Length: 338
Image (tube, rainbow, N blue to C red; front, side, top):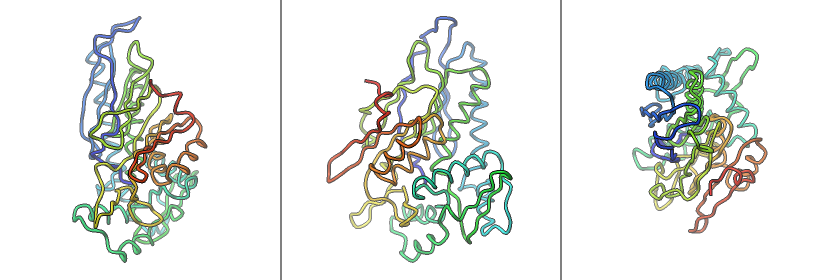
């Protein structure tokens, strides 16, 4: 479920600092920092610089905290330490943050035929190496890795908040859900400091609060299939999240065949079709994971999943027979900025 670190999926168009609300003068502040291997950016409106800086610092600290918990690159993260127990001799008590990700992931896996799967770590490791070396993993390596993949082998106890890995050599990868969750939590931190007009961007994942002064929402440009081209579709976003999943920057081509970094946990191979999926949901954790799931399910089943998920909308652009085709869910039109 690794999300492309270079895929700048969303472009937001914020109002200028000179725009004022009716009741108080607000200034626009922004700050960027690298966390989870990608650029995070915070934009907010506040009456004083001190309040803005305090909120942004607290939000970035929250993101750093989540990175230490959820990174599969860090052998000391809570996620990695849980993976290292496989097969777990007994249930492992997990933190509230890790539980939130594990629980949301498992619920989605059960709804999408296991196409979204947090246990895909053994395959992720193989394909990361494949992209570095520019050669496919051996078939025997993929078959071996598949033996340790399967969300049904991750056992959760909702009452005790424990997790247990049932098979040897299991490895968890939260790359398809962690950044959306981090953006959501960063925005929550800002709101707790009484700043409501704010937006947090984590590469292709955005969580937005109340809109800029005088605006109906944050105007977000959804990335086209070619990331070097400007957006053609825009949405208005407020008190919601949007995530885009795509492989424009991270893929592997061997003998003329294209393999996405988005891996199918059923086959063990990266999907070969080009696509860009944007999902809007009330929470970042849901938008992020659903975007990954829809990418793997494809247009028909993917849009069905979105339609069955209350309060969500999606747009999917795919390359079919050399031409581009766009699919949208029924609720997408309500959000589109003409």
